[in-house]
Amino acid sequence: MPARLNYVELPVGDTAGSKAFFERAFGWSLTAFGPDYAATMGQGTDLGLNGDAAEATTGPLAVIEVDDLEAAQASVEAAGGVIVRPIFAFPGGRRFHFREPSGNELAVYVNEPG
Image (tube, rainbow, N blue to C red; front, top):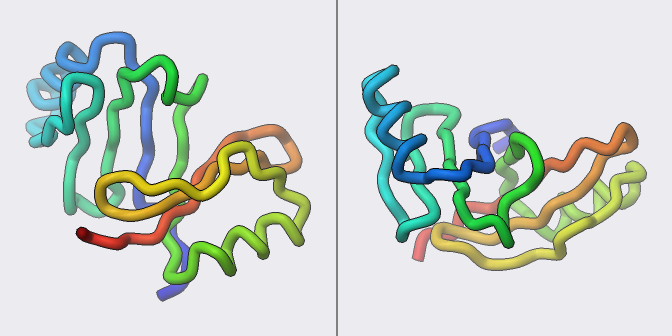
């Protein structure tokens, strides 16, 4: 599978309030993963709401799905990207965060259901 943008994570101050907004405004179903995170699941490009101030980025976070996370990290670094959060596990897989040359933070992940 080629790399593809499949997730956008938004930092939110009120996870429950934002979850309710997107459900009412667009009819989306968001699954809660604890009090500080909710996400759509399996709707093409999914949306995550991150209410954990210690974990959330300062702006929207585009997430790119790949088949080989370590190869993708090597490729990002070789192309001039700067790793800002090394590979870590989360429910559903592993990912890392990087900044591209203009300073935008993005993430790359591999799906590892578990």
